[in-house]
Image (tube, rainbow, N blue to C red; front, side):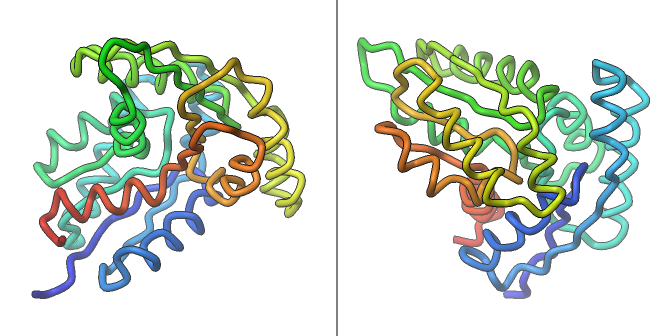
Length: 225
């Protein structure tokens, strides 16, 4: 079977290494095509909302990758859920939101008769509202009762961008105990993945990151399992 071409669409360069490493671990035969528009995150933060113009930019990027031969698309930017839904409609290709698989893995920990307590940590504040809405809607569709606690880790993303990875990881790990007691903790951004081992040391609950979950889920969706 010919290995598929997977388009990876990024709104920040910080997400590129974590997802590349996840593909190397789980699906090394896949041909990855990286497409980066690093103005999307800045424009989203500046606008304070997801505009129709931004949505169309996502559709345009996805259609470009389809013309270039992509057979599946994975977005690594967590603040653009509705835009990603539109791209899936436009291309008809298997398309995965960045945190879709991680949400599914977290909700799989639910137990009958108990409220599932979920923590969500983010280093990009604009992603929290969109991700929270997406998770709550998914839980409701599964008839799973959840309590969601969120936390923003300021300056951590800037640390990572400026080469202070250790400080980035330490700030994320320090934020974990600040959450109320949780059954599972999720790291919102792909760029946070390398902090997961240290964050896990500060948590009695499982700590999930997006890239590994996403690659495994896309493999399954495309039947390369």
